[in-house]
Image 1 (cartoon, rainbow, N blue to C red):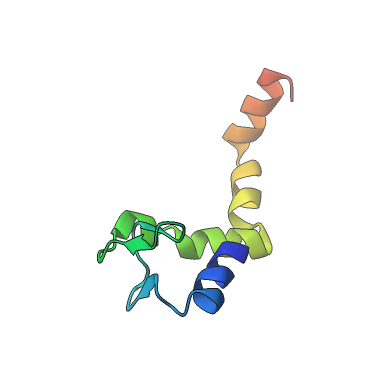
Image 2 (tube, rainbow, N blue to C red; image 1 turned 90 degrees about the vertical axis):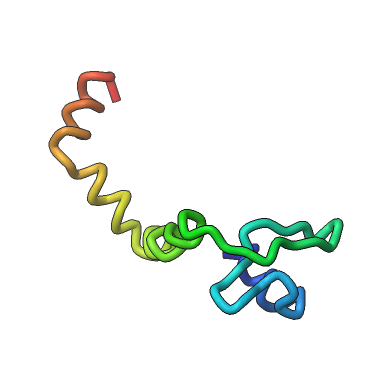
Length: 75
């Protein structure tokens, strides 16, 4: 979250396009691509939700298959 805040607040949106952060950029060398990859952008919303509420982590850890696997592995 700190990195996204840095991009939006400290770089004058230089590395942010109409669809969000560019696919690749370097603040150090001051270059950026003018493209986006859907695979990169598609995971942002679930990651933010999981960071805020742990929803996906809790769903995963409560799955019977996962619980059984952890028990069998000694966790």
